[in-house]
Length: 541
View 1 (cartoon, rainbow, N blue to C red):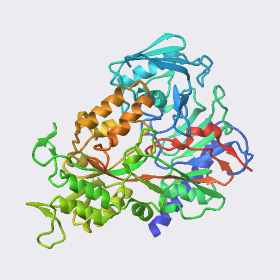
View 2: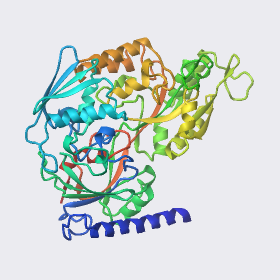
View 3: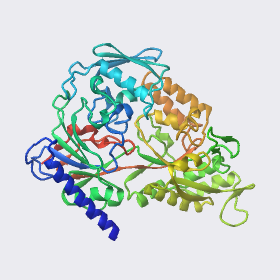
View 4: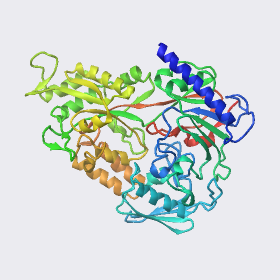
């Protein structure tokens, strides 16, 4: 307790120092005294969003904005609060009959924050630069991006790829004339806000972009404080911030003058299972592949059925989460038929017994031939949430005769062990390409993708059809069949290569009179997804 109080006290001192330093900074615009935090006359906000500072800065060509709004930069398309595709920079787009040519027309009234016009040259440059960066953005299928006139860009793909539309939604456009190696440290863009100052490890200051072509944001200045969870919560309690992201452990503690805003997400946690028997394969690096216990579908299905997902939510997430059944729950391409009845130990026992798993020696652990139902569940040792989930799942499975020992490891160790042991991962993207990467046999053992070497030719074919579709609407039917077509699929109703556990709900303490509009389902917890609809934020009486 003493250590926790000390951290909180230090956090408050650090916060006050930041605020005082920010107010006196010569590089910060002088807007005068706008009143105390929470005053509805203020056109400024202070936000404490923990664990969101980008390591490499604010450059979309190297990954910034992939998980949420790029804030400084515009995108060609966007998704509304209902996840429907709408226009941003684009005024229209078309796809050729063979799916290889995408033509996008853009607005002719857009200026970057330095006053320079944005043209198709900037769009083409952005995509070509992102393709060459070799970053987390997958554009290997992009053959070329070319400005055919001032406001039309043509993308040529190497093969049809319906998920290219997600790149049009996520990729912030950078200025060709002002982009270079240091761009991410002081970005110029055409989004609703412009960069002012970044004190690494401390704060980011932005102001409204006077050249923005869309709905003008009400708030003229935002200060993002990069605080840890304890310090962010302490700042909220001290009345020093307008918005603070908090973990579930703090959600039940009332803070005067602030309300709890709960935002659904596809920020999931789930267990991957090795799908083949041990000893048959190794990776190119020589890492072992396979596990004799999880290679049995009965084990995988029993684990999925036995786990009580709501119990995990109530006990570990303080009730702030939703049960997870796939990697894409509630996304437009999710198949709701993948939902299973869980928390049923009796049904799990029946599945195991029918498959020949028995406790012959009375030690409480099932056997099948010379194989015992003993497993190690690996999780990142630095992640307390995954540790708690792993321990809870381990305890639950003892009741059905499966011993699953939870062990925390470094990511380097996980890379060596992930193909031969169950691993507790976290995913969650607003892009169906993630499903392909996690389940396609072509992606088996590629980085963190498909660690269990899952392979189902029918699922593969559905996903290839989804990728080759000419529109998201056409692709969705195939993504859904890949999850479950009534007979097979990648979900727990089918091959059960994963046991998805929970989707985190993202929690924010927000000033009572601050209206954040209608946030959409947020992706995995990186970036600033809460700011996606920031132009609609207002004070309310």
